[in-house]
Image 1 (cartoon, rainbow, N blue to C red):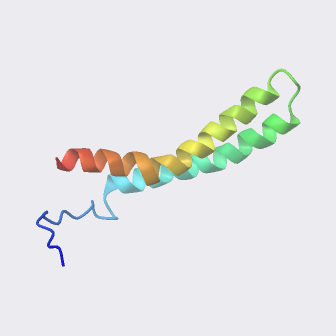
Image 2 (tube, rainbow, N blue to C red; image 1 turned 120 degrees about the vertical axis):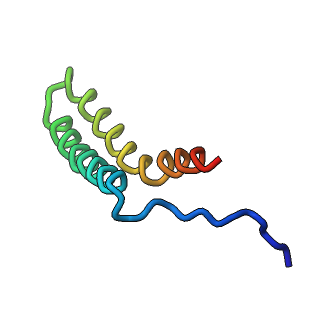
Length: 79
């Protein structure tokens, strides 16, 4: 069996202020994406597509920040 010599580096504590702020930001983006999508589907033809696009981007960021962006930043800081 292989032996891993890399040191164990724990993540930031769940109660760290940065984790709480990130959680609130992602929650606001997630809820805001639904508001933008709702407004976009109810709006006229000139602003509707822009609001729907903004809703899709907000939803994408709400998902990507805690799952992809923050782990990459934390991994970069460990090096």
